[in-house]
Length: 300
Image (cartoon, rainbow, N blue to C red; front, side):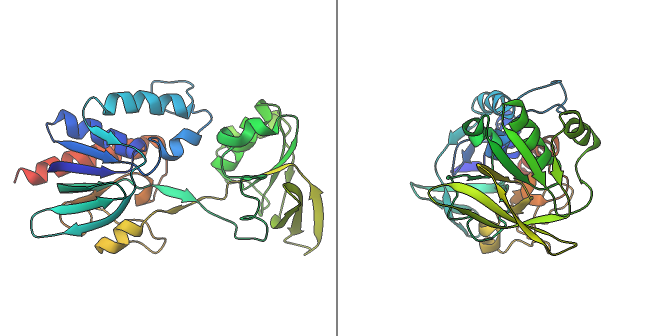
């Protein structure tokens, strides 16, 4: 029996664990992969208080070390089912079964797919959603970065700095990213193909070509490339929430009040799964609030 089980060990889940353990709650974190979530993919952060510059992987390791002083962490243990009875929750994973008084969902988001021909077929063979993970394979090679937001520009800058030759493809005529990142793109003279979408990915054993289309003229053309990094946003990982009957907004994100409560009693949510400003610091803040609220609610 646990007081709090946290599902997901990204920035929100790890912060929730720190707060939950420090307040005396018996706490377990269940993570389907490796602790860190998409935080592991952040090449370099320059807006996290206390660190002028820090790699996502390094900050995650610091958070993980701190969290595991206060809570038990089980990685590579995906939750498959949650059942609610009158008093507690039964959580089933692929390895075991647990009981808890309260749940904090910190399941985060996954990379949105383009759903175009060749994307699935060439995944791991030239198609990637993580420059930090796969970028070193493309040193001195031509790559395309798809997207125009913060993530896309961060990917392009990282690829440029490790010696790749990135070109950004964006479907609009202006970028949506922060000015600082746009200035970096100009500084490094990373080319941008405007008003254009990726229609198809081609190759034999690996990616060799990209078919692109100009949205204004309708003209298609072919670009030779060694790799394609797709950064067009995220979608919520909400299957567990749906099965519990938790209310979601139109985009599929969990709806919470200001104390991170969902519509299901003693179930809370924190981090990117709640939508809004998907930033590391807001995920941490929501994790802290969720753990504190869960503790208070069980003391009533």
